[in-house]
Length: 238
Image 1 (cartoon, rainbow, N blue to C red):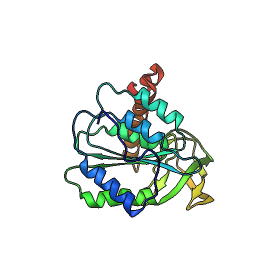
Image 2: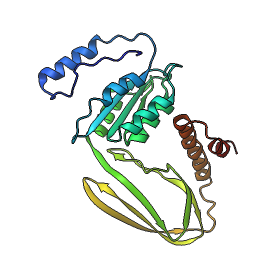
Image 3: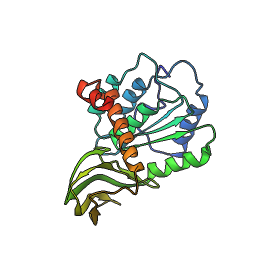
Image 4: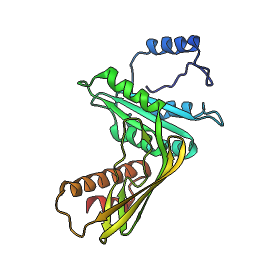
């Protein structure tokens, strides 16, 4: 809510005693007041330990209050490059754009629960993603044609049960090569795929609409995070 608190002032081992203390703390929590994530994230960021991975899990069931803008999150993200944020939004009133942006910008994952979802199943899926990262630091190179306006601009990390879909435009036609590099299963790997880029393909017109929607959505996230740059707003509205 609007104040932050912690069970410990520094990371502690996941002993049975510490786990019980954390569960007791969670069971004593009661919902009250508004929702401001920045103070809690600032506290979580200070718990990072050099040389160890740092993961923050956000559970949120509401929109942030009007006093909280994205400037605070820009500062947090800029100063905590090694922190990976996972989010779980609960209910229909949650701030989806903010939670998705926090996860995307840190290489984490955003999940959401609606009242009709199977809660134990959804929570277990998030747990599996927390425990099993499949691929990271992915980069896609396209040879044979020129590509532009790829979305998402940054290739997301992949976790168990997830997939990455990249939309974009290509200019030209003919045979081409897709080269994916990154750390997959803990090992540096390169995957190459030969494909054809047709001069005119009318079989899947919905792909154009999906690209436009994803492109506009990504630019809107940038506006929320970076501010209303006139050039960016113009691209969205045209």
